[in-house]
Image 1 (tube, helix red, strand yellow):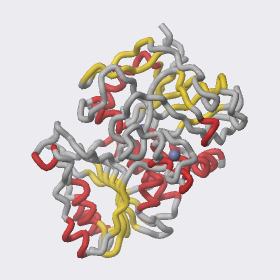
Image 2 (cartoon, protein in one colour; image 1 turned 90 degrees about the horizontal axis):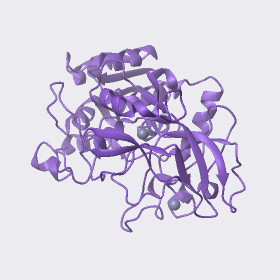
Image 3 (cartoon, chains in turn green, blue; image 1 turned 135 degrees about the vertical axis):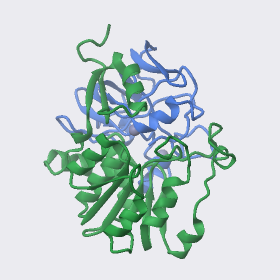
Length: 229
Length: 156
Ligand SMILES: [Zn+2]
Ligand SMILES: [Zn+2]
């Protein structure tokens, strides 16, 4: 947890400037999105909204007090506006990245970023930790192949939004987050669904990649019984 | 040692790879006891990055220090450490500003900054030089560094 996802989720909320009482929306309820939800909660957000379409992940978001928004059933931007008196969230986190896709699987790299621009209120901030790449030969269209997205920059500028990006500086946060865990104030392990021997990595990757129900986070143990064969 | 090796899109296998060893005085050898699968691995797993076949996955590692180089005095054998996925030196212009996510010296391409690392039951790392704040019990932190040949895109 401390090697990556908890610091990465925390970094998203740091770049988004989440403060006590804030209304925060998080796009993506994978391990990092759920850690961003946990981090926003720790930072005192008054309302944390998490958008995804996998029921198991949404249930985990709800288990820590977040509002789960299923974008395969509702328009997530509208739900965020409804939850914030039409103003939009104070801040938002992008925890999906360049392989963002519609619930039917159609990739659209700009999907979550533009939803964030639409979901966050004027002068708000966005922290984007989902991975984007400078080239993506497997991308779904010419822009994506060149590592570009059709960002609603006009609206982003018009609203005076702040945008932070990039991989997290783990060491900036890991001691503090470790001590929150040790002090019983944070329990990031709530997302762990499987602890398996290293030998089972191929099946585990397959299940996790397919978003199979209940495979929310896998921890592999090289020395576990059954390993080393 | 065993590692999760990338064989091509949606194909990985667990294979024997050369054991990690102390190569520089600032290296730390860690026996990895927990290694997580990360969502960012999936970009590589699905063949959507320039990650080469034959390289191994994994950058969320926790383990026990089993050997330290002569130049390491902060981390001791027996310490439990968590290895940040960022590979960083700790003393470049960016690292000194807490931007270990954009280390200038761990990146093989001089015009780039920032690097990350892999699954194996031992991970090489000159943690001694830069980070390693260990703590007893299940949750401790340190840093690692894999002498990987060439990194793929930054992973989170
Ligand atoms: Zn990771
Ligand atoms: Zn550095």
